[in-house]
Length: 326
Image 1: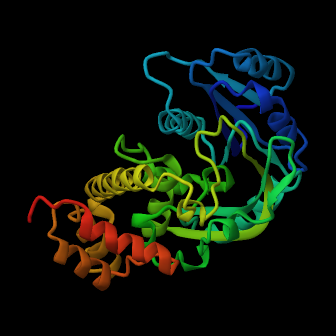
Image 2: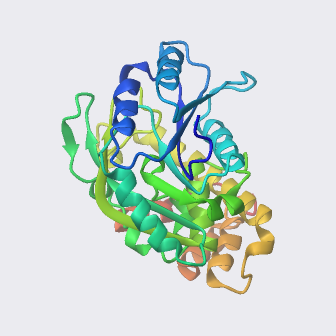
């Protein structure tokens, strides 16, 4: 068993038997062969555990982390467990993998080249992510570019405060180095998701870069925990706007809780005189701020999003969400 590989792939599984073999086969087919795959299952009731055990018995690069069974299924906890383990094993580079996608054969090769170039000779904390091809269950193309489908603008990531209110990094498309894990771990229980937390750490304390190549097929199916819905999906008159609006309120509150945990746990690392920290600090108070204070914060701190419609929705949410200070 190769425990010294500097490049690790972390794969969190839960009832993923339908597509799991195709995903692992795409990892084995990588042109870059020096890697270790660490898999942690979250208590699957289908054939997932049998599948991953079979692969681990036939390929010494594949390790299975035994599920402790002391928590409910959670992608955040699952990936947090994986990251803690690969960090302990000495990982230098970490790639994140979902259970139902298919990687292009040169994904590791391309991303490692970009990651090593970005971190430089001083080994800066780094995170990179790439575009994806969105496909259906049969791997037929739904959208040629996930970035265009979702109306994302990753080129704006040089302003870390843009990451406070909306995550624009897709977990299965990202890779990071050990220097970033040294800052990011342990991931707070208040984090919305591991990829968002790591993106915040890279944006504020390191380097964050986007690779425009589409290096995996992002499969959409009925069991996706988090799918790729079009940017305009929420504006469809046949969708449930009321339910969507209330869900958006809850997501906003969670983002504030995450921002607060990020600020408080990393407080000694910030340049407290910077515009980026000021924006973060003010964002942490938005739930309890008055409606006027909320709008002032949006205007002053560069928290605007990448699309006019998103900004209109944000302003409406700031005005309509009850404030404890009113």
